[in-house]
Amino acid sequence: WGRVLVLVGGCGPVAQGLAAGLLEGGATVVVPSRSAEKLSELRANLGHPAGLATLHGGFAEGPREGPPPIAQQILHEFGRVDGVVAHGGLIRSDTLGSGVAGRPILSVPGESVLDDVTKLLGLHLRAAQALLPLMARVVKQEPGANPGYTLVTSGLQGPRAEAHVQAEGPAMTALYGLGLALRNASAALEHPVRVNEVRLAMQINRADSERL
Image (cartoon, rainbow, N blue to C red; front, side, top):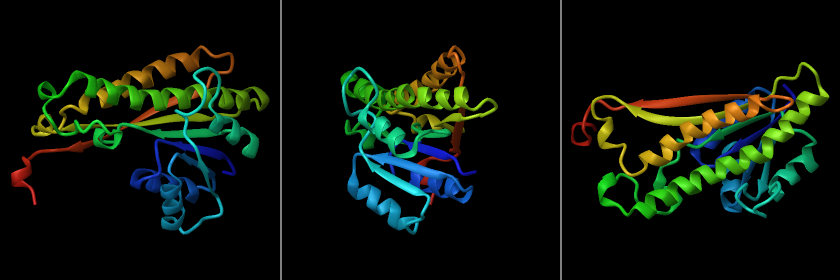
């Protein structure tokens, strides 16, 4: 491809798999993270590929108004953004710090659930606000270009799924609404950018005690 793709949502196992696939396609893959240690692990796990660029910083950092510094750094170093893969619904809420993951929704403080929703949506909204205009610039400068912003969400299906969609459910579900809002907002741009959602679901048919 020779395109510049940005991976949003951390640099853990999910990001590693996504980055590996994008690198195989010949893209330059840019992975920002606030954790320098995790970025180092990502580079090592992928074998230090030439097409992988890791940047120390996050989209939730910086001033409340205007693009975050990490977006400005991406534009300065690469000059363009041809695509974004933002994975959000695959993150359990225990990684967000509130400790509500797996607990019944009626037994946790409402503030903790709202904190998870705010953190997850805040990250992905800030990233979209910063990156979609950069992608629209590509559409304007290169007629026929077709950059895409892909939001990867998740869900659970099956007769036993309700036992697992507990207090983290609102944060995951809120991302579905964000995906719809981003599609509507992008369509209204002077130079629209294609916004997709890929929803990955895990089928749960048996209780934990019945599974190995």
